[in-house]
Length: 383
Image (cartoon, rainbow, N blue to C red; front, side, top):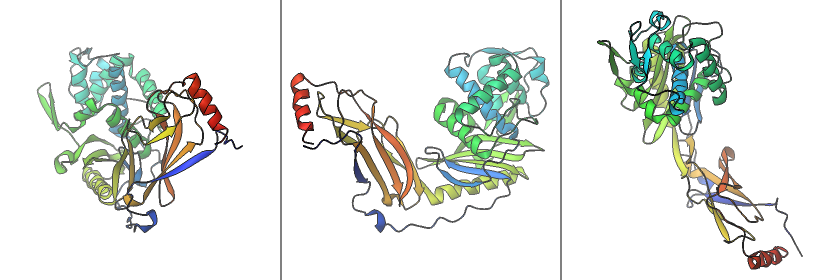
């Protein structure tokens, strides 16, 4: 008699393009990214988080008004949790009114909606609007900055610290290109209803119309956000995001010498990413990837799949060489609960791991009848 212990695995190889053998695909060379005049940059796929190119991405630098993305994320979270509402009326304090730097020109003592303050901060980069929002949510700017740092830590932005909501210089106010890319991805993916405001080209408040400083919104129709920044210490900075043929790229450029340099550099990096890489949807959420044999359960098989769409990013032209391997325990015994992890999906390209995700049961599979359990118990002795 033979009995396979439950920890033994069965590995199944799934060729995504059955007609092609992985070793038969000729890989196209990927050239080095263009050289731009920046202190640091980071280019990433917006869906997968795959790094396309970087230059000192973990170097701590002053983020200037890119800080307002962290301010916005915190405000968006407060909106999602219904702590505040877009139509809330915010009374402008003297501190907000006197905040130096770029302005929305809100007036002392007036009442402004949260939505108008958000548009003032996002489109016009208004420091006054940013402080007014912070005070509305947390009482003071300093308390709000503490909340920003808590959210930054949860996002994994471990090389960032924020002292204020505007990006005005501070000794302990810094971030990195990698962290800011993480933040940008979070805003795009978690708050699409608010991300659309980053493509607004012009906003008028108090009879004063101001244009979005992100010139890529005019130059490249595929660019739909995000934010510029500038101080003497930070230089000229830009986070830009573009979407072409379903693929989204996020570029973070820090510390260039001019507004033109940050635009030209960001455009070059975005074009490079789209030209030499591609992102593919591998498996859709909720669709079966495979069926697992379940012993002593009401149903002989349970479909396994993923709770979210699974994308991969690879060098352009290499998708045919991508390989999926399923590692499934030799014996799975019911009952099985929907969402229960039962197997592992590993995706690789020419021997290099790209992603590893647990495969979960797509539905419940309760215990079988007494007869089913007894029958399967006998069969297992001979497996």
